[in-house]
Figure 1 (tube, rainbow, N blue to C red):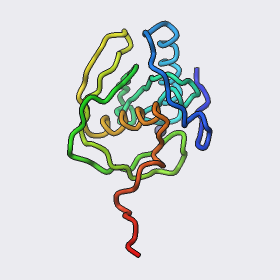
Figure 2: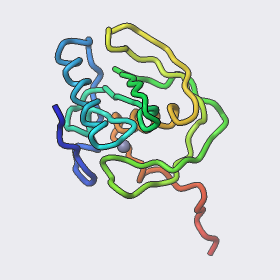
Figure 3: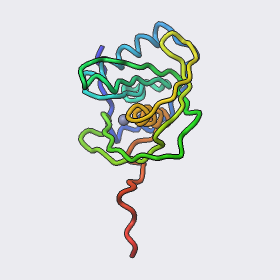
Figure 4: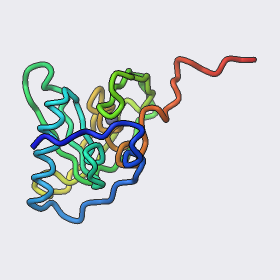
Length: 158
Ligand SMILES: [Zn+2]
C-alpha cells in the first residue's frame, strides 16, 4: 500500500525513531509499504519516519533506476565503522522535494542491522549505497540534509 510521505517542516521528521524489538508480520508489511511508496515516489531510499512510523526501519534500492530492482531492507541499522575518506555528493530527499543539497559523508561505512528474516547482518557499503544508508540513518535520528553544512560553500571571510 502506498503511504503519504511527510514533508519538511512536519515536526514528526524531527523525532528520533525507536528500535524494533523483533521482525514481525507487521514489520514485513511496513517494509513492503515503504518499498512500494519509495518506488512510486522515484526515490532510492525511504525511512519509516517519512511515512510517520517512528521505527528504526529503512528500505534502499540504488539500482532500480538502471532497470533492475535490488531492494535492501534495514531494521535497526547502526553504523559501526566509517572511512576517513569523505565524499561530497548531491543528495535529494523525498521529504524535501526539489531541493537537493551537497552533503559530505564518509565514502565507506560498515552497517550492522537485522534483515527481513530477522537475521543479524554486518555489511560494508561504499559509493551511492553508503551515501543513501547514511541519509536514511540520519532520518531515524531526526536529521535532514538541511542540517549538513555545504562543504563547497564555506562561510565568507568578512
Ligand atoms: Zn531523505
